[in-house]
Image (cartoon, rainbow, N blue to C red):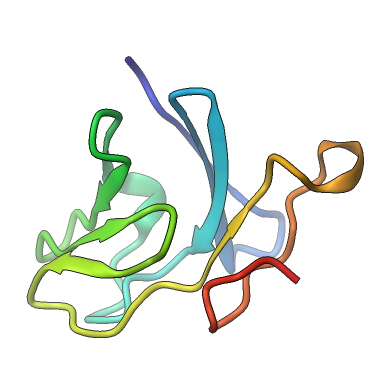
Length: 96
């Protein structure tokens, strides 16, 4: 199963579509600012791995699963947004 990653127009977030779900995440890894639009998405575990130092994060919560990153990503679910527009991600990990 393939994932689609698309950077938002302002370049601050990435929309990830995988396994019938859409997520909006920070565009940069909190460890060393690796560009997550170039990351690897595991469709089974719903995780994204940074291409720079291989930190991985849960797409649903932003929680780091493997290091070196220790800070979470801001995430938001896009599925419930009106008109299919991505819901803004917040540092708390919930859509506004």
